[in-house]
Image (cartoon, rainbow, N blue to C red; front, side, top):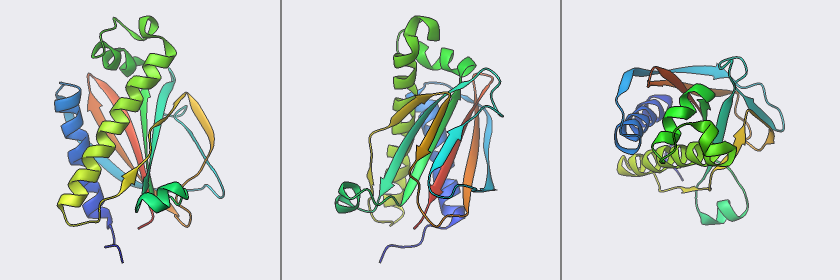
Length: 182
């Protein structure tokens, strides 16, 4: 039986993964420490994600699913998910790391890919660090990528809450939601 992933372990491990992604993958320095809060999950059958309330200029979204093992991945039995939201203002900084001047030059597809790569990097570090703490190694999906809004996503059933981490880099905010059913 898998070891229960409690909030403190998840929060600390995720915060470390985000900080490592910012400093190593993005080659940037966090403006300040990330913070994490627990929120109520109102979804019933499917999860709609957007950041219209947080980012007035819109956002790019990437989602990665976690699975206990390859068999669960093949059967789409989700045990967790990570959602990364990057504002349109912050995407300009992100795509510069891929050699573009700004998001307009990069285009929507490349901007989505950049957020997908960031999400994949954070998920990979999170997975690695949990394994290092003695949790079983999980499988992760390839990132799903969206501009602005995604409706009808699967999510770990039975969850009544999720955790929102807010990171600060380039004078901008990057938001991450994590939902686990361990």
